Image 1: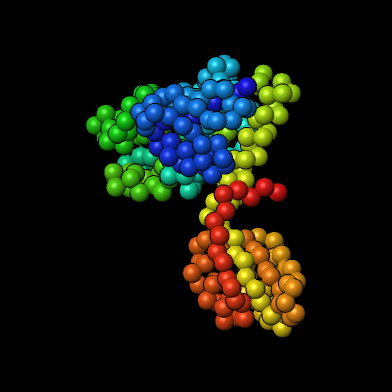
Image 2: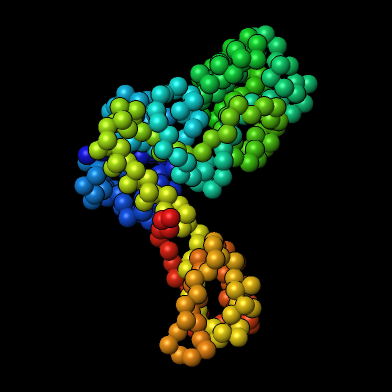
Length: 291
């Protein structure tokens, strides 16, 4: 029913892991294969393409659904429906910023300081041109095809580049003077497909599964038994997403407790629970959490 396009490159592993956790495992012959499939009747076709291309192809209806960054939606100006964020930047763990950077010893401290005719290199030329126009800067914008920061100072005067931490720009002797936008990975839909009730229902099912996997990421389920007398002490130690589930057991004076907690720090949490009176503690992986 739905045609899906997934990003090739830096986002690829993150998306594959996410879909696997959502029980939408992507099957293909090899890592170099651009054609794939998902054993789900709601998804009829799966392709892998560069994230730069995906917003345009989704807008044109070549695909019903696609995954790309907000930066590429802004660059292409694609008119698509965002079904929500599904991750961070290229590493999948944080936002990425599209920034304007200049040499560290430059007197320029904002975009308004740039002189007429300033040369800017970027992989996002349309976004950069719009930004300069909005701020009254007459710039010469050149499309970069990699190693953008290396073009300063002998080829261009400034760069617009994607950065998560800014460390690569600092190593290149540059300073960030503006942030054009903050980008995260999004699930995008074609507007006509989204307006169709049957396709929209299928999309909402996919979003439900993917969001469930996102919520579960980095969390585990703890199950434990505790004496009634120690219950308050154990619950006080337990950092749950919501109130923990407490159930009386057949054995008199005992209850079972379940809670979803962050995986990070569980190595300290389990001993603390044991010290508070918990016993029979189980740590179980979680693939999805659906509200």
